[in-house]
Image (cartoon, rainbow, N blue to C red; front, side):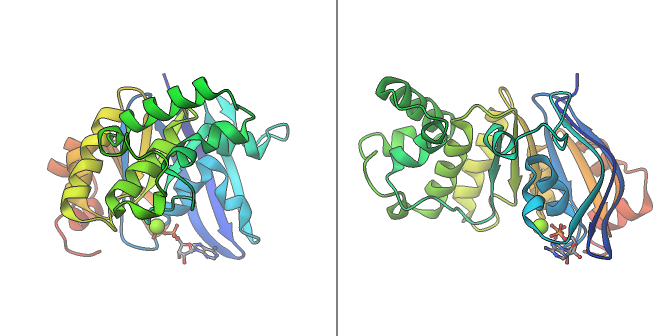
Length: 250
Ligand SMILES: Nc1ncnc2c1ncn2[C@@H]1O[C@H](COP(=O)(O)OP(=O)(O)O)[C@@H](O)[C@H]1O
Ligand SMILES: [Mg+2]
């Protein structure tokens, strides 16, 4: 089974070809790490899966992106629906200036859910899944801006989980965090894949090695190699992958 896929993808920003003939698919309940030097197209690729690039004026896409076998760029697809069903977590935690509770409840509220019990249950479940519940359960009314950066990032993960997304996209979610918070996020990702499918951009190769089942190595807009993480790190097929993971460039 395939949860999401990219077929014959080319992406341009104006005249600049940022992604070249990318083919990649993602199994359910797997973690795939996207690695490669800065500017090679990892974030561009990730953003295809929730149509975030659509917001960029000179962006052009060729090819097909599917999530749950559905072409998410088909004419009848509502972009709002896509953004609601696919969670995204960014490099810098970006909680809303609202309470912890309202941050997590947000996705349900914009979907028109106002039933207190449903909201309470979803907030609790999501905070538990994000390994934050024990730390905040007595302070749900507290502002999200007042908790630590690491807690804010787990809150953003809880917010993404609340709408039970098919796919979770993470763009360097731990790169702004201290080592302890980073370790917590890594453990969390490991737990989350029991229920979700995760694509994560990371510039940290050790992290990719620790948390992912599959790794894709991007270089200058091309997917050079995509394989099981163990295979990629121990015995890559491509010389460019070997050079990158052994630190010869990047
Ligand atoms: N909004 C944009 N307009 C023009 N070029 C862009 C835009 N976003 C990214 N790019 C270019 O596309 C390439 C890939 O960028 P990006 O996907 O951010 O790479 P990565 O995440 O691997 O660092 C880079 O050359 C970058 O300068
Ligand atoms: Mg990036």
